[in-house]
Length: 412
Image (tube, rainbow, N blue to C red; front, side, top):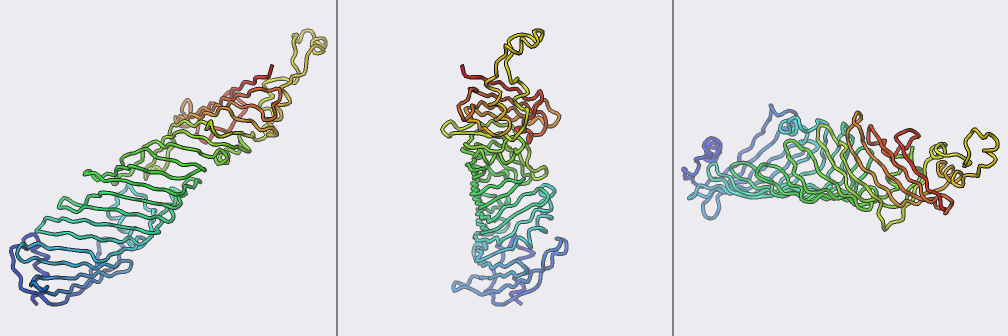
């Protein structure tokens, strides 16, 4: 009964518990906790064992067991100061079981309902409770987890996480976060070797100090940015280094049948849990130390419509005589082979500027390409400038309209 009296005091008079001097307690108490208003959470079986220490202080061990939940905690009450020392021996929670109902209760509307995180989240930590003053620290780790959203079409595989949290009377404050993801897939693209290092601030935001990943054959680094955990929005710039042009060509088969070389540059990255990934402005240029070449998808007339097979020096009014004095255009056959994809182009300059004005905006992108035929023919340089108004996925879908400007320089 003395043990039951202690539990009642701890529950009802916890903030002023230091005013009581309790005798040594021995006993066990158990029960089942039903969280009726929390949605579909499993019932929790709990058990508390009380044993006095050699110094006469009361020591309790609390155990929690439920589907997807296990926890063991030690509590020790210092009689003189009235301070409760606590330590988590072990604790783990299955996120696939507890994640959805907890997110529904605490996640608000900023997190899509279909996001599912799997894996065992484990906890360790220790601290003190003196009246209402809480102090201590927690470490949460997740190994080989996963996360995905069907609605937003993305998934994370083999996710490792470590978070350090400081506990105080004002609430929990995230101190640091380390995240590693082996592979991520989003909107048809794959990223690997993802690493994120972050620190918390008093406003419960995350300063993303470093975020990097491998994608499209190159390495991408995100510049530091602030992330509000209550309403997660990413607004930063990605620096691209050595992205494989062949990987980019796969996204624009209407324009390129083949591409070699690497590009570098920057692109704005914007994401929110409600809207997903949004396009941003940017600049991509070909790496000067890596030979680059492209081969156009066969588009008859793309280049030759702007020139003629023969160069005529006299006006049409001279009739056959004018045609008789004309000479063969040395560039025509080369341009025909280029537009049919038979002859690759060695790229000397590639510059893609992105302007996300949207489908109704004046301009979405400008792509400038300067290249020369690989066979050393009469054509010295071919220059393309493509102005695109509309979705950004039209950037390199070259067409034969007034949005495409080009110039052909022939060798002397």
